[in-house]
Image (cartoon, rainbow, N blue to C red; front, side, top):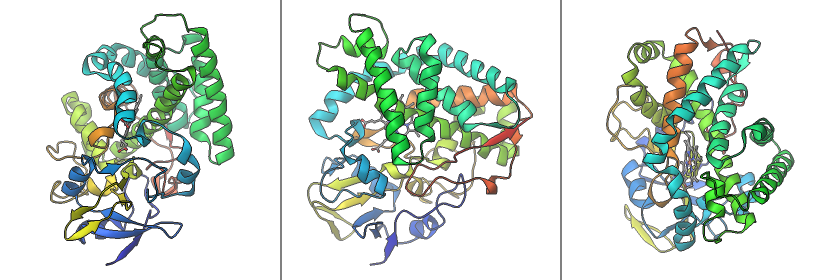
Length: 391
Ligand code: HEM
């Protein structure tokens, strides 16, 4: 059986690694060799991943032996327990606590707030000296503001909070990232303590009142987790989404002329970019038979979400970006018990942002050639560190 060195570096800000093409045309199961010499199964077909991601014999427990640790950074973060790394009853307990804040009804009710935040961020963008970095000076700020609003961070603290969470997003070294995380945790800890007796409707107040099941530490961890999982992902989707549309001017024009195409454009961007390519990591807890092979208990399994979004049996001509595409099942938000809790909110943010940005800044364009941008490292989410734009 052939072995594939995983992960492979990307060369384009919005395309998966070049080796994915051969993988999607090759066998459905491949052995992956990781940076430390460990091996894992690599699943290359969309239908197999759909089955495995909903199979209770697959675990997300990162500290379990055999879990595919695809990067030294993941090894260091192994002990940081979040929803994404929990299984079974523990996972359900924490996830259930957050569900009321992400229902369709609650998300629909947030539309006016999201529209206001997007308009304010575009106002600030237009006041800045050009060129502007669309990642840090617009998208990260915007996605951060939406999460602060959801958490209930008071307006007067939002600027400070934005600076601290931006520092976390910018952090390149482990040391920078720990310092930025420490500052955020200390702010949130004070915030939770100051509101212990409040019965507000915001996420933090509601959780604090939740039968006292959560300690202050738990609450802070939950809030940090929402920021860590939600801010960078949404920011990259906004920035890369804008860049992809600018690189496909005919489709951008069609979307601008007919706003009813915006939701379809968002869905196609989610598929085409599938930025959380590295989120489909699991370890088998029992033997699983697949295509004549046995995935043994304790074997790591990698389902590269961006590869599965280019499966030609699900998406005809998968490398074509087409905002009118219908059908298919992408994994931009994962699938199964760990599917993204905030996918409705993320879709809403993308839809409002792309519509408002391109209608209020009709001459928006990239200030540098895409090829000049530094692409994020292989084991990170798909994305760029900065995206200079002008208008
Ligand atoms: C476009 C933006 C986003 C993308 C692409 C994205 C992607 C994902 C993916 C792929 C997963 C599944 C991980 C897995 O398979 O193990 C996930 C889980 C999660 N996401 Fe998102 N996400 C986005 C926005 C957000 C936002 C805005 C929030 C919060 C405000 C959020 C909160 C979460 C949480 C809490 C989980 C863990 C769910 C669980 O394990 O039960 N995400 N996200």
